[in-house]
Every structure is written in C-alpha cells, then in structure tokens.
Length: 214
Image 1 (cartoon, helix red, strand yellow):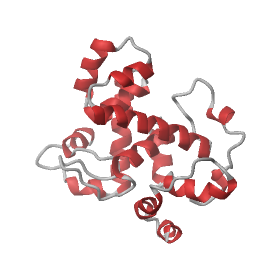
Image 2: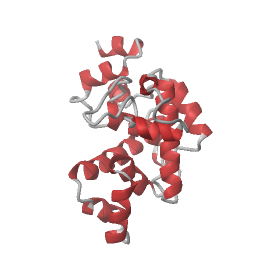
Image 3: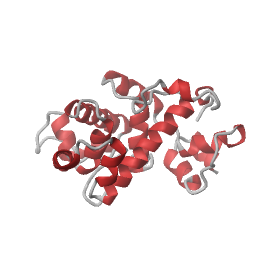
Image 4: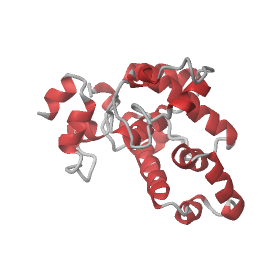
C-alpha cells in the first residue's frame, strides 16, 4: 500500500502508513522503508529552489517532514499553511504583498509554499549568521523568543542551548529537525550543514539512494 501511495506521489499517505515502523539500521533490506519515512518529496522543486537561495536541501526536507509530514494542504490551528507551515502574514511579507492582495490559498501549492519557505529559512540563516540551531528554533518559535534565549544563555554549546530552550515543543522540534538533516544527508549524500566534515565522509556504509526512485 505504501508503495502505491509513493507511486502516486502521495508522500504523506505513504509516510503515515510506516511512520511508526521505521527500521533501526540502514541495510539493503530496509532501504525502501527508510525511503518512505524520509522521502525526497517534491524533489524537483526542493532542488531548484534551495539551490537558488543557497539553503541545504537536507534542511528543507527536514523542515517539511517536521512541519507537515509532506501534506501540501496541511493547516495548523493557528493558521499556518502547507508543506512548510507558513503563516500567511509571513508569506505576504516575503512576497512583498499587502494584506488586501495576498491570497493565502496559493500556499497549498507545493512549489509556491517551498519557494516562500526556503526564502524564510534563508532570511533566518542570514539573521543568525548561519547558526542552524538558532535558525531552526526561530522557524518554530519566532525570532523574538530566540533573541531572548540568546541573551539569556546564548554562550552555551549547541547541545546545552537546545536543552535549555524553555518551550518543550521548540526543544523537541529542534532535535527532530537536526536528526532528520543527518538522516537525509546520509541517505542521499546531501550536504549536512551541521557537521564540520563533509557528509560523504560519514556515508561509506550507507546504500546510495540517489540511484533509487523514492
């Protein structure tokens, strides 16, 4: 069933069938299951738009997975829309639109949502000098909160900073996104911006999913 969903490019449907059965090890026999749990969903859009704004693909996939589980029509209780769960006001600012002219319905279109989401990530990375922990935390909790935390305990190491984030949701969100970046980089040989060494140095024993249609 998951394979059928994947062939129809229903990444959310495939993921939901296997999200609680993720295998433990990267092995040849579990390759397809890993690919369903961590797909390169909307690959053409992600590759093109992330390259245009110099944002790592692994980060974009990780954000999409954490925010919407690959569902283009996802809508949060507070009004965030689409794959990367953008607030219409944020998207309108990025699009240089105004309250009366911006149509939030376009945020359910994968290409449009990813374009705005990538630009938002680029703005956050620029704001925090490519500090991925701060940028990811701000994507979830807002720059105002992150700036306060930065003043209070910004001198801590990344792992200690994360553990001191006072919002449990944001704390777990940052951990989840960082873990997904690592998995995406290992599975597909993508850049892992959180590592000091190239991701390829950590992938010798991992099957090459670039040659597998997922």
